[in-house]
Image (cartoon, rainbow, N blue to C red; front, side, top):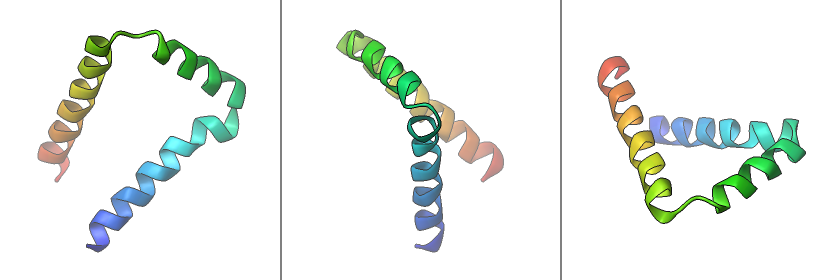
Length: 60
């Protein structure tokens, strides 16, 4: 459980970096994401999952 909480904490820290450092840039990125189709969003989600799984296999 400690490993899971550590991973969750790191995700929250990384996710918070851009809005904290540059709210204007974060808002621009978010506006562009809203223009993507459902298929494009699903593709990026699938690519993120695949990259995470590869990293877990290689470094885990």
